[in-house]
Image (tube, rainbow, N blue to C red; front, side):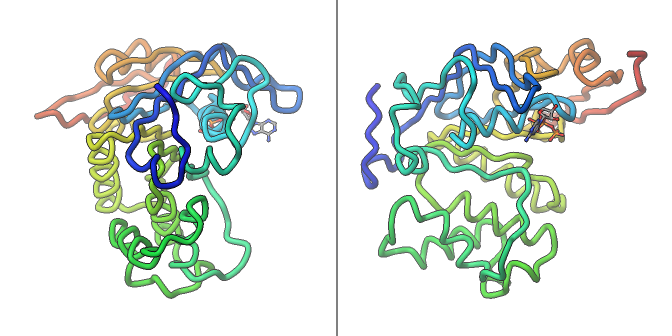
Length: 267
Ligand SMILES: Nc1ncnc2c1ncn2[C@@H]1O[C@H](COP(=O)(O)OP(=O)(O)OP(=O)(O)O)[C@@H](O)[C@H]1O
């Protein structure tokens, strides 16, 4: 499938992103080893695993923030190296795990930064407003981001992720800092975006949310893929035990998953 990188024409065009034998070194440490997996249109994938497993590093490679030291990434079958930074930004939007605002930008202006890869669209104000509405942040649209609570700031950053037209959305711990209502609202919106044809990759620590909303789980440990597949295939007590060192149970009720960590396992 050809990738069309024209600003208007990539609106809604499906995007598959594939990692082949990906490796990454950071300083002296090898943080990703032999990662091979694909993230497809209409799929909501959760990348999960313990602290330091390499989730953020993988997402940074997918978004183009970091260049892998081994293997390669393809966008609809074409090497990611062949795309300019602007082309990649139009194809994939990325929300980092955390960022502290360096200056007191207004919330709406921060959201508008998500439209920069498309220049200055005529409907910019309407788009920014819609994105703020999606995350319940219209009330503080004009406030400086330095004066928002942690969860309010996160919602503004999420609006910046959602405001553009990229077919691929990559979000690192998007639900962290959100209250339960806004977590649910956001995950429902991500689900709807995937159902509408987008490709979504989320790093998540909440395994109940991951199991309930995501089609696919990528379970990482020590920079490697421990398992990938549907939630019920990946979230077995044995695999959770191997990855996290805890015994656990998943309770499913009407499609809603409830993950219960039970006890620490001997390492
Ligand atoms: N800038 C860096 N320089 C060197 N090593 C790094 C750097 N950033 C991360 N690492 C190391 O890379 C490994 C993977 O880190 P990464 O942030 O990808 O993990 P993670 O799975 O996202 O963890 P968490 O759940 O804690 O956010 C860790 O061992 C970490 O110490």
